[in-house]
Length: 249
Image (cartoon, rainbow, N blue to C red; front, side, top):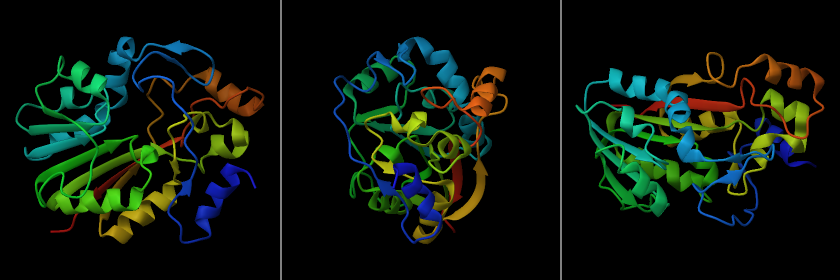
């Protein structure tokens, strides 16, 4: 059975994710590296594009009443930079390079580390974001439970991750581009992520599949999906899912 078939089986069982063995990463996650197409990417040089990619999350946070915001796995600070100064912002990331770069762009309280039980007090935050983080976490269930604990009642958790049961994964199978990141170790479908959040106690407010209106929505990617003959799948609608969940009051 292929790894994508295993992810599709999440629809039929009670599991929330498929564990996928990690592969060695030869450099810091944020250093220049090859993408699945073989293109060497300079992540810092893509800052403006990456800011635009997460603008919809920043807009959601900024539309709430100001409060205390935590961005887990904040990367190079593209989201925190866009959260208005009326909020009291915190960031947590396991990369020291991420901390150093993000401090040049935002004034949040940035910390080096990973989320564990006791990292923050219970009921501390009004919003917690973890955009493309949960797939890197070996034990995602305690991760979500800890986020539920540190959120205030009425607080929002915004969780984005690859959807390993999407159209591109089904068409391309093991050539699905998001299988190529060696640090993707916990693979979710959109349905299984929603189930995990609900079973943890969250109420689902909204589910988004950011694609149309983004830099990824091109005729070239559509044609690649139709032909299905590329070495790796294109970025396509449904490949990413973002769930907006709320801790009940």
